[in-house]
Image 1: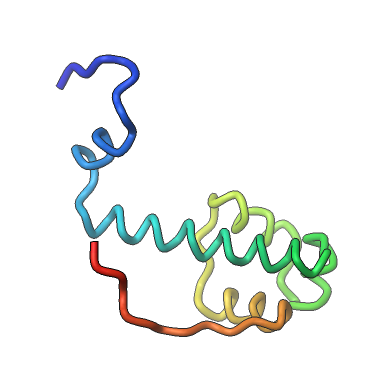
Image 2: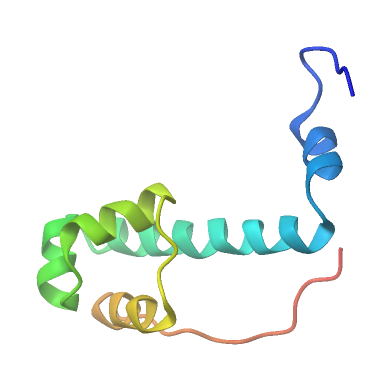
Length: 94
């Protein structure tokens, strides 16, 4: 598997990961993105969100960087502090 530089990430990704792994990663990125967006829309720092949610600021930082995989309880606490909720909806068809 000797690929040329400049190959599209999507092509490489499909060779390295299953469609299920790609979908899970995309969902994780989307959830983290929505958490960051909601925090920014409220004008909150990570430290302020920490105070409101009870989740330590370093944990929030790791979640936002994508270096930590939070459990559902943590996500719910963060969402509640941001005035948001979690909904389960049908997945979009690829």
